Amino acid sequence: MFEIKSKDGLGRIGKLTIGKKSIETPTLMPVINPNKIVIAPKDMYDYGAEIIITNSYIIYRTNKLKEIALEKGIHKMLDFNGVIETDSGSFQMAAYGDIEIENKEILQFQKDIGVDIGTFLDIPTHPDESHNKAQSDLETTLERAREAVNFDLNLNGTIQGGTHLDLRRKSAEEMSNLPFTVNPIGGVVPLMMEYRFSELVDIILSVKANLSPARPVHLFGAGHPMLLSLSVLLGCDLFDSAAYVLYAQDLRYLTPYGTKKLNEMKYLPCTCPVCRKYTAQELINEKEEKRLELLSSHNLYATFEELKLIKESIHEGTLFELVETRIRSHPRLLLAYRKIKDYYTLLEEFDPITKRSALFYTGEESNLRPIVKRTKDRIKGLNSKKYEDHLFFGKFPKELEFTYPFGQCEMEEERREKGDSELTDEDTIRIIADYQFGTGVGEKLFKDAVVKRSKTKMIRYIYNENGLMLATLRARDGLFTPNIEGSKRLKEIIPFPRYRIIVDEEAAPFIKEGANVFTKFVIDMDKNLRPYEEVLIVNSKDDLLGTGTLMLSPREIRAFERGMAVRTRWGIEKNNSTQEY
Ligand code: GUN
Ligand code: ZN
Image (tube, rainbow, N blue to C red):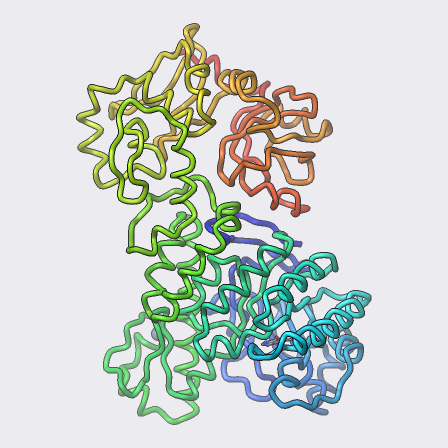
């Protein structure tokens, strides 16, 4: 079971529940080599790991390990109570050719040793493989996938297809129809090793466009901190990596802005327990085994620190800004990021309409964010009294100067004091409402409006002539949150089903009292809505039940069994419209 808690771009903070255990995504599964443990699984909690991954094929073919695993179970064997995922040996097959196991055999083994998430024997297609071969490999992979879902086990449904995007799309579609718990994107390790990030972006986005948004996506073999923010922005939720150990073996020090050679470093620019205690020279002077452990430890800390920063950025709505700094760590990453312009429709569909933080320009690439074209499109029909120039959007209505995304915080104070003598409050609130709910809405919604300003002289509350509150202009982003009285008007002005979310009669009494709307109660909705938009909650007869903020995209609401669709602000029977001023 997977739920979304917060969104930015195609990125999401999610909760993945496996039986009685749940983990927060995006996250990384440290790879545990059962033959050579560098950092003990039980110590992984200290790094922030809630889930680890190991290889069931290695255990299976090593008699001693196989016996222990079958006898004690995988959790006791590794001494780890969190979620344990296992791979199947597919990767060994791709790397070394012969592998002496069948799909059913390795699936049964994973079940027998009690793994939380298993993997069937997919065929990782090399990026340079021909279309013909990639297609026949994919057909085998899909046959094995259909065989796998008969096992009563949470499973990875790995998506293959090489660099052939038609095959990736087909694979994603087929996998959406099979009951997998997670859908990894496989066969991408060679691309990452060769810095072929543009092809990686094409693959991820072709998969995302055709896979159910309710499926967590694992980018198989990805774990370098430099690549994490971009991958999360594009909709990947899980990562695994042996990188923390493999790089340490080569005396390489991981940072989110690239890999450093330890013996060329003098200062260790990190505050993890290892870097606090050791200088670069001291680390180099350590005995080989100890040094491997210490450097692996730093590498893992650095990776989880980057994941926390990514999650904070999703929460703030600054994931694009973070990615745009990270892509400057390597020219191939910068080039890869530019690919997002080919996937505007997909990104725009999922990117929230408003964010907690102001938009920051980090360079030319900032113009590729979906919000730029979306916003330009949304202001096209507006008839403003006065226009201004904006770095991102060109000519824009001055009435929107404090509304997201036009507002620039560093200028706010000064402009707020001055105000604009040429624009009346009526002009301003009309254009903001038109921008938010469509051209022509503002004039009708606020035909008799009385504006009340805050202590800081900002427009804050809008009342009707009888003193009933219609809407609040939210300080954070200069967009309206309608009250019940305003929502009643919006429902009359805007034809069905625009700006509506239509809910089941069963949930109606609760929503009227102000309860949130959960995805399973949504019957239908306006498909043009975007996450974090203000919406009207109605029943199928278009009776108003309440109003609130949409938390997901329409396609996500349809796909998810669990989670909140609308955070209800006012229910029709519990509201503050009559609050006098
Ligand atoms: N590890 C890295 N890539 C892959 C892949 O494509 N499939 C599987 N099963 N494991 C992997
Ligand atoms: Zn460190």
